[in-house]
Amino acid sequence: MSCPEQKEKLRAQLREAYGRIVYSNTTHLKAVDKLILKNNRMKSCQIALSAITTGGFLSTFIFNEGFLKFVTGLASVLSLGLNIYLKNFELDTLSKEHQIAANDLWLIREKYISLLTDMDDMTIDQIIATRDMLQDDTHNVYKTSPKTDADSYAMAQKALKTEEEQFFTDEELNQILPKHLRIPIKKEFLNNK
Image (cartoon, rainbow, N blue to C red):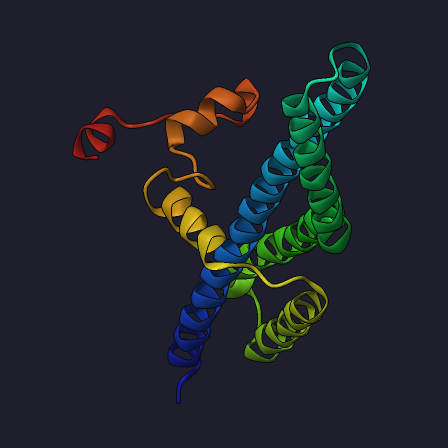
């Protein structure tokens, strides 16, 4: 096999690996968002149930109503169940683990972009060595990170495919880059989009 053919095969493999990393990174970020939202809702429920329990307990001394005792007892049982659930699942810790995985995958993603950018100036052996190192780095992240779920993956898929969350148009890049790093955009290119 000739060198250009082998480089093209490596390029195809690297592009696919890059795509998988982008999906994994985005899926972990979506898992973080989901867990933070769920944790905030649970904490709000805890506060509400505690308020009902405390208010109901104090009201029973004033009104001595059976209905208030029932509501207070029910809120107390629900509060206990919620506290047990939160203790067992530790949503804060899990969201932090997903954030660490996303951060680690971001760095690997950027290294894949650099490798794809630089590979024309590299030997086959250099490309293979760098690829193997990135595969090892990816494996280390995957073996220590929490598993993602189907909902987070679906959210990532929508964000990447429909909302183009991790990508910028040339115009968007020009808007956020300093003036000296902006590139001219051809109008005929924009009209073809």
